Image (cartoon, rainbow, N blue to C red; front, side):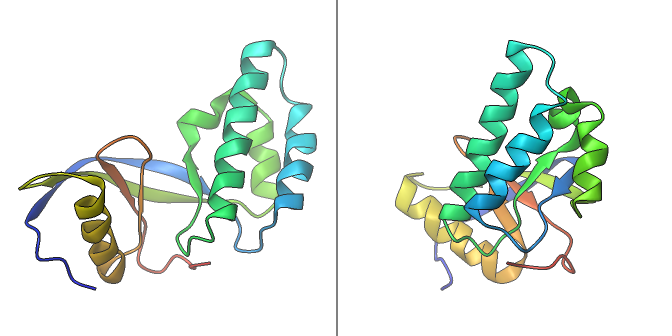
Length: 143
């Protein structure tokens, strides 16, 4: 449960995220794609939407107990679709971004042990393919 590995967390920034409501399913993601597709006006935006939906599906399939979120800035391509997400009960919450630095050999197993320890201390979600983690407000509902 608690890692013996030494690590440091450095606060990078605070950003607003839209957080998925706690009731989720893969069917929801297809419906969400259909709803949001109307706000996409070019091929680039369609690719951004597909990437967003794929990340959402991966999160749901992982059965993680941490919230799924995306930075509001990252979703600006949806324009009025952001208002649609809010109508679908997506909450805007402040998320603090930290970098996680492992003091000794940083391999996947050590990193997972450290993140597991952090999950017992706070509501965190690692950012894929980076050393960043999202830290959510303590009172956010967990899945």
